Each structure stands twice: as structure tokens, then as C-alpha cells.
Image (cartoon, rainbow, N blue to C red; front, side):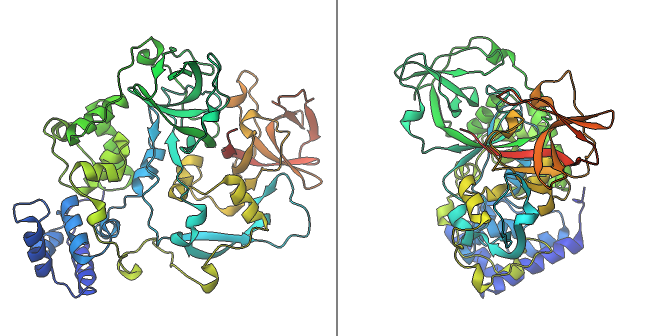
Length: 532
């Protein structure tokens, strides 16, 4: 999988590191001496003066501690050094989205390169009112990339993100396994019912001894809540806040794959009544690993198999971790020697990368802060980072783009590389996105408060399953002869396109002449919608 000894690749890496150090008027010998003086030669932070030779062998991988030493001595950012050494921390969240999850996992949304070029858009000139449903390509067009730091105003707003697991989908079918949920930790206490026995109208992300759950809450008495399942037979367990449970925040947005790829299941440990224990945060590295793994209901063998999947996805065997190594990490409190395996552990165990680093003694606040120049650390292969004068500052809040951003409440830039696994589309383009934020009388519950739909335009054959519930029905974008659009379940019967409404209010099914009165644009594969 691309990890056999490669002298050419190793030689190129050695030369790249040499050029980076030369940009600071440093040599490898000086780095080695400085790391020995600061940390000591027996320390894991020590950088050997033979580093270039070991790179050329094609089998050497630096440790996280050595990368930290390179960062601190050179003054360049720790994350940039990781990318130079062919290890990208942003892979963690992408892998967490792509891998199947038994239990709900908190995604690491903090791993962003502030200098990364982000493909950007601008408004197209429009002379008519904004339609309720429209192709995004009719409303927006591509423009020069922007540096991520210039988009911070619409990016990081303190939100958290969680991926719903198939074994604790308490809010199913409002949320399904694989849904990415945005969580606002700055919620008002008014969101939680004050009347004993009342159930919240909003969905919360909570943490208890068995992990994370997205669910509605019922207040039993002051300081006591019960997670409420919408339709599945989970046990109702009373939790004391904050001793036995923590309310992380209120869910306000969902990125929903359609149709659902995984069926929810209620495991025995959550179906039967269980006695909650106090929340405890493990401090030791090995204990933290073991606690995270058991919370996610994974065995060592299952973790090893997931690491093999990661090695396959990234085409690099260095990401594989054997069951025996995993056992050593947990029992002997020994962090992995290779930095690639740290990426695997964070991805599978659901650990925040900065928490992982802190647990092995690395304090990022003491690392370098200067970005490595673009020509020495490629941030987007094949994409030149262009920074034009008009890229500085945000435009006026007047066009469709600005209105859409305001409705969305921010953009999860850390998911920009996860669009393909979320949608199943290999290379999604702007033409595959549809604005659906103006349609309020929706014909399917999954489209309620919808903002954006991603459409597979190759899947144009409408199918309606009479024996399946609404959340398992495929939903399509349909274009009428008058150039308007609707989103609905539909099927073809004797040459007629029959629209099947699943709306709150009674609606008659609509019949349109197929290929004359209407055309199917494609099947909706992902929906972004507000949760209210």
C-alpha cells in the first residue's frame, strides 16, 4: 500500500527538511544539538544528527516528540511539520466521518490550517427574486481561492460536531446513523424544560458513562434528566447533572446522508436499565485510551481492523496498528513511536488531537507559531494558494451568498474534504448542489428547515418503495416545465410521474407527464438542514 522502503521518496523528504531548516539558517546538526540541550539525549524529543540518512532509508518515521522539537527549535508550526513529514492531522475528522461508528463520536473540528487555500464563490448577477429551490450554479460562481484565516468570521464560531452512531440513535428517525450534527455549547437554560415531566422540544448532545447521545431530554426533578428515545426501545435512565451526565450543547444543524446507509440498533447494554456511574476523566494516557475504546464499544481486534481500513484509505501501511501494539499502549501507558499511528488512534478512539498530545506530554502552546512557506509545504496538491487584494475582508451582506451564510450560521470548513464520503459522489461540483432554503411547505420530513441539498445527477430513475417508511424513501429533485423545482419522493406509473407527498398537512399526490411536464434532475444524497 505504498509503504515499502522507498529511497527516492526518502531522499526527497530529506531534501525538503533541509530546505526548510535552511530557510531559518539552521542545519540538522544545530537542531540536534539544540534538542539535546533543551530535552536531553535520552529524551524522546532528541533529534539525531543522522536524521537525513534515516529518511533516505525509506523506513524511518519521526515521533511526535521529535516533530515537536523540530517545531520549537525552528519556530515553524507543529502542524506544518506534520504535513511535511507526510502526515496530515486534518485526516482525523475525515476518517471519523468515513468510518462506520457504533457509538456517537465527537469530531475534531479544530485541526485547520489557517493558511490553507479554500475554493470560494461569489454571487451571480440576478434580476429576479430568489426562487425557493434552485441550482446553486445559477446563483453562484467560482472565484479565486481565499486563505482560511480570511474566512474565520464565518468559520469557527465555537460550535462542536458529532457523528451519530448506529447503536445510540435515540433521536431516530429525526437523526439517523451517520448524521453529522452541529452542537451549540452556548445554549440558553430556557431550552431545558423547567416543568417536571416535560420533554424538551430541542435535541441535545449529552455525555454520560456510556458515551455521547443526541436526544431529547425529560426533566424529572431539579438536576435530574432522562434521555428520551423518539421511536426505539432504549431504557429510560435517570441521570444527575453534572455528576452523572454533562449537557454538551443543543443541536442546531444536521448534515444528513440520504438514504440512510446504516440501520439503527439498540444494544443490550442500552436496552436494559443500567445504573449510571459518575463521570470520570482519565488522566493517564493508557487509561484514557482504554476508557475511550470501551465507551465506543470496540474490541482491540475491531480497532486493529479499523486501522487496516485507514491504511487502505490513505494507501500507507504505517497507519495500521496491530492488536498487540494497542494492548501495549493501554496496559503500559506507552504512546506510539510513529506519528502516523497517533492519527489512527485519534480517528478510531474519538480523541481530540490536542488532548492526545497533552496526554503524552506535548504542550502545543510551546511549539513554533510561524507557518512554513507554501512552496516548502504543499497544502493543496494541484491548487495554488492565490491571495488577491479583493480577498481581504468579507463582502457586504446583500447577495444570495451572504444570506445563505447567515441562514447557515457558519461553515464547517473542516468537513470540506468529507463531501465525497458523506454523499457517495466521487467528485462533487457546484452543479450538484441545490438551494432548498426557500421551500417551507416541504413534501418530506427530512427536508424540513432544509438549506442545501447535494444531488446525484446520474441517478435519474425515480423509485418509490410502497413498503418502506418515509425516512427510507429516496427523494428526488424534479424540474417542471415552467423551470421551477420541487423536492419529493416519486415514481413512474404508466408513463406518469407520481409525486408522493410525506407532509404534515394533507396533500394530494400530484401526477405529471414524465419527460413532458417534468424531468427528474437526480436523487438527493445529502441534506443540510436546521434543527429547530
